[in-house]
Length: 381
Image 1: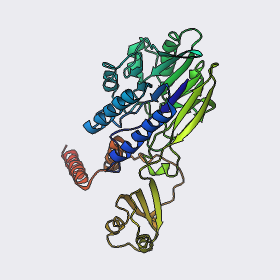
Image 2: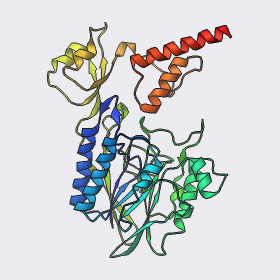
Image 3: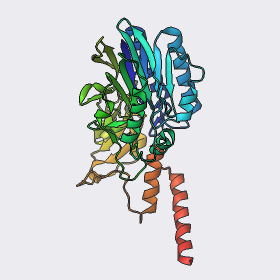
Image 4: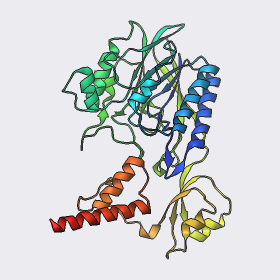
């Protein structure tokens, strides 16, 4: 049986305030082309379909139109799970009108994790779809107050799923998790709400599965063994992903459950990349680039209105800094770390974490005003 494994589309996402709608249209067209050319029996979307729990209507429409086109133009079944960026309830509602013989859509947890069972000439293939869940929801679902970390959530899901796999069936597990030993990127949010909590899941949690289609981490990679894989995100969502190859994973499963995987490269509409040099040198290039750009200037002195001038050549430049101002750091502390005696920095980091864009100048003025009022109130108390 042939599977096409994708994940982490993050529909509705922006890149430092720049819409990625057209970039996502290009990616979805490439997924459709892969379905048409390779004819998988199943298209898997392993979570983070959307970038946030309340995506814009354009993202919902984009996904709905895509699913309708796949349903009309191919015989592929579709398996979708909610990721940590998604609203579980919203994703779960997509299952209401779906054809249960060729789809499995999982949003909230279910105490009975029943698979989608498909057949090829070698027999049955059971596909278990295990959506992301925080510990509190898992405790309520499984009636187990001892669940306290993502590994224990996954253990409960896998235990339920195993009970429903038909005897002799090959088993595919779709999950959204951070598996031990995998490489991360800046764009992934933590999977635990506890400060200092352990968010990883051991690869042994998936014992018995013939293929594990993972979502959450944005780099395509296997984890320990070849049949436990992340397909990765189709687009770069941060400058730390510059140069990373993005792909979807074609999986061919044999009669004995062994798999052969092939990466199908995504060709991005535009790339996220950093450029470095003196302002005059960068402007002299002349050719306009649509890429998403981070600029590091090597000029010894401040330049006049550098971002406005850079954008005549790089209209999607979103960051600019001077190399001479870069302070060396002795540690790799999180960008979000800030002392509690620096309230403005704490607020700035919180806003950046939630929406992945810095606060605006107008917002900064409101924050400063609020902090000043609190300081006056404290002095008067």
